[in-house]
Every structure is written in C-alpha cells, then in structure tokens.
Image (cartoon, rainbow, N blue to C red; front, side, top):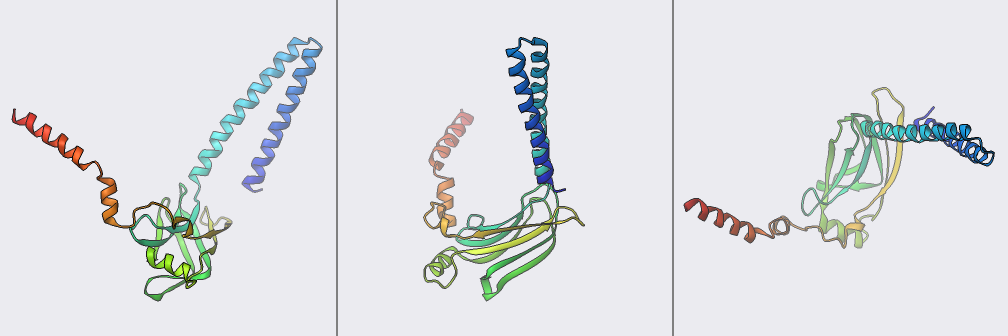
Length: 211
C-alpha cells in the first residue's frame, strides 16, 4: 500500500470517528446524558491531539525522504542559465534519471536529452551550464529555442526501492521581467548600497580608539 493511500485511509477513519463523536455529543446533550457528553468530548480531544501529532510525524517523515526537483537557475551565477537537478530532501536519492523534451542545447553545442545518475546526496545539486541569460532570452524570442521544456524524471528513495515518477514543465520566461541582478557589478551595488553608512561607523570607531 502506498504512503498516500495509507495516510488517506487513516485520515478517513479519524474523520469518521470525529463525526461520530460529535453526533453522539449532540444526542447526549438533547437527552441530558452528561456522562456520555463528557466521554464523547474526551474522545474528540484525543482524536484532535492524535491528528496534530500525526501531522508533525508525517511532516518529519517527508522532510527526511529524498525528493528530486529539476529547474532552470538564473541566480547562482550572474548572466548564466543553469539546468539544476537537486535533491531537496533529507536523504540520498537513488537511480535518478530524466528525459527533456524537446532536447536542450547547452554550451559547446552539446545536447542534453536524458541522463542517468546512480545517486544524488541530500541537498546536493547537479548543474549543467546551458547558456548566457541574454542569449537564451533572445533565442526564445526568435524561436531558435523552445520557450518550454517538458521534463519526465524518476528516482528511488532507497537503493532497491520503487521508482517515484514525476513530470513538470520548465522555462525561463517568467524571469524575463524580474529585477534580479544581471551582472556581478549590479549584484555588488545591491549588496553594498549602504557602504557609506558602514564607512562612517568605521571612522567613528577608529576615532574612539585614538582617544
């Protein structure tokens, strides 16, 4: 039984028990049966507490498991477009493979159609240098490149586990009108916009030391 089906089944049972308890509370109040009301309220409190505990446990479980994401990255290196395959989960991902349609042209006129990777460690990235940002935007406009790519990929969360299959569409078009730094120089100015203020503080600190 898959994790999704198992969790759905557990939640269905809990919701049914919760609904039954609420109905019992209503009837017991109508009939002034306060002992039953108190018992039903205790059951409701227990179900809610169990649900909250379960939600935290499932979240921790999901964060620990391997999870692969594939996308274009325009921010790691200024003026460069990277294709990034990243393990965003908390453990090693095995048997990682992906297929890009249509095929993706990268630097040196190489083509990426598909790749097979034995594993990717947690939080690790595999990066391919695709193009300069300006060139790729221009090629998209002139239809030298497709604007959208479909990526079908799969991976396993254990060495001999079942493959998890996913599909998504990736593009750089949503970055076209963003205000992200286009060069290392602009990035420097953005990060050091308050440099005069920092120098004033440094000067005051030096004067205090001299006194």
